[in-house]
Image (cartoon, rainbow, N blue to C red; front, side, top):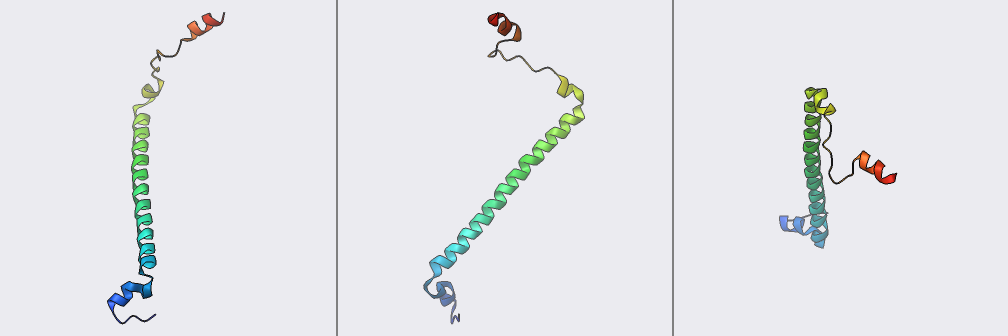
Length: 83
């Protein structure tokens, strides 16, 4: 295709809406993908840093008992109610 001027180039022979719309959608999709990947990488790096910190803290961080959940009955009350 021969274009004699810049306006002919941007008009794309009457198909400018489709051509430039396609370029715009592709650019938007690639930019969105890059943003999502960046956010995912940040989250993963934070999780890895937390795991390393927990690992460096030693067994104390992992062996501490979990606090009791008052919404759940204890084992003794559950066993007593079944008897």
